[in-house]
Image (cartoon, rainbow, N blue to C red; front, top):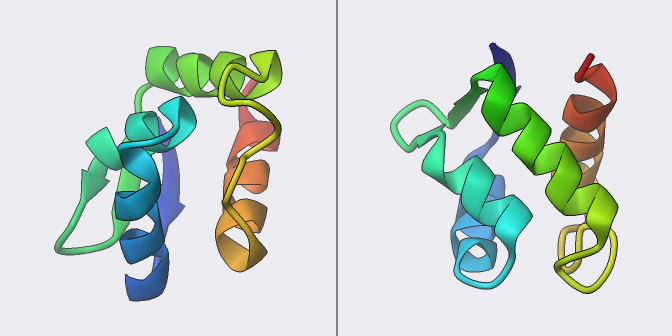
Amino acid sequence: MYTLTLDHSEVTALDWLSGRYRYAEILFDALDGETGMVELPEHDAWDLAESVESGEDGGYLPCAGGALAEKIEGLLLSIV
């Protein structure tokens, strides 16, 4: 299981991004809105990595910036 903890502003940003980008949809679908915790099983983590690496969203983590992008990058680097 891969985990990511988001604060309120990051949850809000991910909510906005989720209707627009596949990587954000994968994360938002696994989000517990009460705790800000994203828990991805391995197969979803690989889907996330493939989505980001393929550039299917038109670039590398489009519209994600700052701490949210850093947290997503950290999660991607932890996938083995």
